[in-house]
Amino acid sequence: MASSLNFAYLSRTKVVYYLGRHVNNITKITKLHIRCNSNSNKMASSKVPNIKLSSGHAMPVVGYGTFNLFKENEVRDATRVALEVGYRHIDTAWVYKTEEEVGDAVTQKIKDGTVKRSDLFITTKLWNTYHHPDNVEDHCRDSLAKLQTDYLDLYLIHWPFAVAAQDKTAWILSESLTPSDIDYIDTWRAMEELVIKGLVKTIGVSNFNIQQLKRLLSADNLRYKPAVNQVEVNPYFTNSELLDYCRQENIVVTAYSPLGKGGATYTSQPLPNILVDDVVTKLAAKYNKSPAQVVLRWAIGRGYTVVPKSVTPSRIKENLEIFDFDLTEDEIRTISGLNRNFKCVTLDKFKDYPEYPFTWLSTKK
Image 1 (spheres, rainbow, N blue to C red):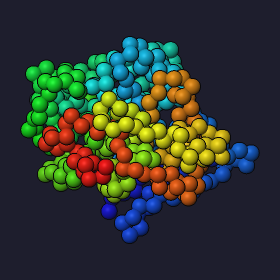
Image 2 (cartoon, one colour; image 1 turned 180 degrees about the vertical axis):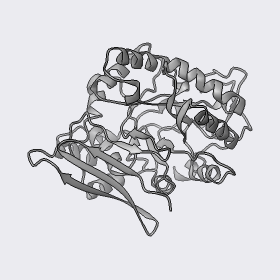
Image 3 (cartoon, rainbow, N blue to C red; image 1 turned 120 degrees about the vertical axis):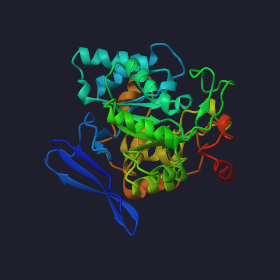
């Protein structure tokens, strides 16, 4: 049986452990509160818990997401703010075109003494046009140069399907992109080499469905299992089956679009607004928190990690201030009951590609 996932929340006033316990193959998240100081039971918002990955490394459970629509300096400035208010996990991707600005911000904050590189957990992602094993290391090194770092804490295969293009730097919606027959198993073996060479500490995947994960995990002579699967999860897309499978296999899930936002450019569906849902707003009023904080706390309560994105300084800070309250188990279930199986990010353009991971969407909508 796969080992359970552990959150360790440490502060002077409270220690909270989230323990994944397997009972009859069903994982239950059990919360144990140990009061260490009778004067207060609130955790400083700047103390973000870590989760231990199967690679042995620790990852902060809340990261700062840096997807951007090409507004110059926006991510650079926002990343500086994020580091100043306490984020230590920064999530980017080659295709976001934000690696250079993230690198500038991180370098500045290291130079001024705000952080050390060893304090940080930096994630980026291999783009689809670079899946050929011969391209993986060069692509990784390109990201390292832009991020101005010698190693990555986490490197993900961004999507399970490979894309062919004469211009590998072509944008995601370019008409020049065509399907490729490169197998993600072969790509994964090249990813393993990055760990062996010390360029990357941990490797994982993104947007892989259960069938694709099973196939990867059953591949012959794996040297490293995927430690993380970054996928969309939010109250309107709870993704429970995939979460359960990843927990069973000791794969940590990181949620993108955790607030049900983003992806409007890449889907044919209008996006509903979770943050005005009555269930969420009533809980926000009860706890004197914002709707976004309630949704992010719900995510942590379900046992996965999140990378919310904002460029507004007050919201960047607010998204981190979610460790001074708890939702009850009933409240977590109530929010989960909002599920509509509505996915924000579908990349409809690629729906006919081999290994497109969301073929089931047509049966859900």
